[in-house]
Length: 108
Image (cartoon, rainbow, N blue to C red; front, side, top):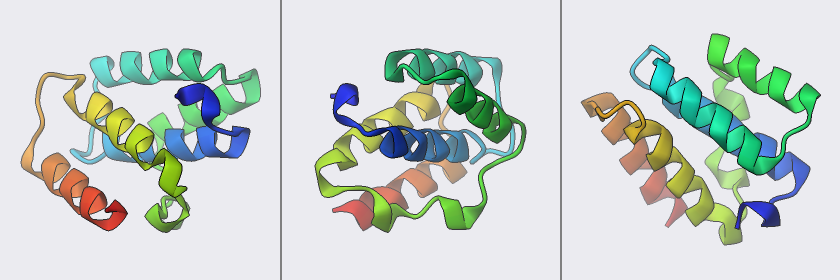
């Protein structure tokens, strides 16, 4: 299903994933591994990978993470990827749960 995303949608997905990785205000090694694996699965090019690495150093701007721009047909892909990054470190804290639940409600 990831191959159904356009280049812009792949970057949009990675913005959301990185934003959610920052939900607890720190990026753990396990989250970095998850993001690297997802970048590989999305077949991002070098420039796109540099952008994503930047979002791991500094979270994407809130205005760049707009759930209304997620195409209806890709919403489950986004939710699955976000659950993946949230669970990658073995802990999902209250802030992460709250953020995910809010986005999930907005997308339904």
